[in-house]
Image (cartoon, rainbow, N blue to C red; front, side, top):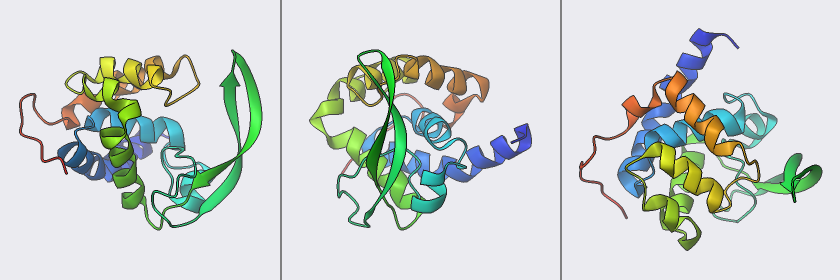
Amino acid sequence: MNYRDKLDFIARVAPWAQMSQSKYGVPASIVIAQAILESNWGQSLLAAQANNFFGIKDSRIANDGYVEFKTTEILKGIPRRILARFEKFNDAQRSFDCHGRLLGTLPRYQKAMADSDDPFVFAARLYECGYSTDPAYPQKLASLITEFRLGEYDAPKGAKEQRT
């Protein structure tokens, strides 16, 4: 994928990420970075076949069904291939909305949400909350935010959010 294609992907998903920030308070820069990382710029089989851009496991949050894929989880420091059920979404926008709802409303992620004004701290907190088993996850998100200037998509600090 060339740089132009990457910018096009960001432009395509940015409005959904900004809606997520407005509705649930999750920084748009984080949402975009996670979509990039988790879906390999929208090219993963999970994104292509199930509109799941975040690796959301089957939680029945969308009630659109599920798909099974092999995935790598890091368990006790050792990468392991496992078969997992992942949430299926009828469309990509629904994936973004459900992702925002999960992070913005589940008690598990409240420590991250408390730092929603700083996407770099938020990234670290996501890992601490167990979003990913990859110990390099916060650094990967931070690198994407920096390289592609994703912070420009975040609502200005102090902007009124409309959480539901």
